[in-house]
Amino acid sequence: MLLRKLGTLVLSLVLLSQTIASAAPTSLKKDETEAALNFDVNNTGASKAAVYFMLNDIVYNNESGWDNSCKISSVTPLYGLDEDVTTYVFNISKGSQPKGYIVVAANTEMNPVVEFSYSAKSPIENLEAYTNGNSKQKKLHYLGNLNYFSEYENNDLVSDYGEKQSKDKVKKFFNVNKSDKANNKQIWGNILKANDSVLKDFFVGDNGNGEVISDPAIYLQNTWNSAATYFKDSSNTKLLDYVGNWLQKDYETSDGVGKTTGSGVNNCTLSSLSNIFIYFSANGWTKVPLDKSAIYSKVRAEAVSLGYTPSGGLGVTKNNNLVTNSWKAFGYTNGSGSTSYTWSFSSIRSEIDNNKPVLFSLASGQYYNHTVAVRGYTKYKTLYQGTIASYTHDFYVVHDNWNSGDRYIYATTSTLVGAATYITPATPK
Image (cartoon, rainbow, N blue to C red):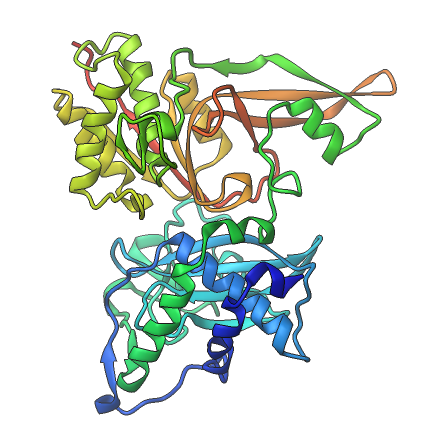
């Protein structure tokens, strides 16, 4: 089954596992190495590398700690000391049991897999152990040579083994063997050519099978207690009307902007932001046109200036710039965007309570590698054997630009990974 799913690609990627002799960094002489600075692998490309490495290991390694029931449960981007994503950490699970991790480089000159384990805690879990409860925790970093850090207080960093040091004193170690660069690029070329559709079977969705949630009550019955009844708590529900529900393909296809034929492109962030600007247009921001195509044209032009392409999309680190620049494109000087990697349900709820939709980019769950527009939140209560239970369930209400109606993201005890871009509206004119 695995070989049938992967076709000949698994066979061409045998080199991938063969090039990783150890999880430990290799010591190389200075004249044998070159700096690797071109971080050019996006979330989707890294996901392909993780999937193919895991499956290649299952098929060809008799001592593999994984089998074909293992799935990737989450992915977390790690950064350099700037906006570059340097690696992605993929946690693997078998049902509810953790099954190690894979760390993938975000650089096509580097070996795709930085390190992996069948059973150890991932660097993310170790970092969280040392920063637990610290409200000032910011980005997580990978600086090469197995150096993982989290931003801590006073601009300090704490490593995944608990050592603290000043941010301005750490060094970067993105060096690769000169003779390996061509081989690494060839391996990456094979990985990146693979169709994105092969990923969907190997990631765990919020409801266990990757499907989007269209009815919270049915979702809760299927995933919690089928004998209970679930109902919406209207006093803890708020929806922002007029957030657009246009789909990605309504805005842009492979045939061009405004076309009605052709396949979709990677424009989910642009589509979600355009749907949000429809909300502002309908609520007093008169410089923003009501016409969806006119809105998208402005947003797309700003996205292109930030590096957007139909095939590659737009990196999440540019979301805040896209929001700010789009406000200016509509003639407003004081609107802005701010992206948070440490968002919470309460922080997103606060934005909705203040009548501000949220741009939400997910790196896990049923909206893996996708951006949606959050237009509200809702709470569901549980009725069991005639009694209302004390525990409740929170959901984000989203327009996901895949479907025209409301969809939901489960928020209670969620392990979602992603970034929330908060929008500060310009002064209406």
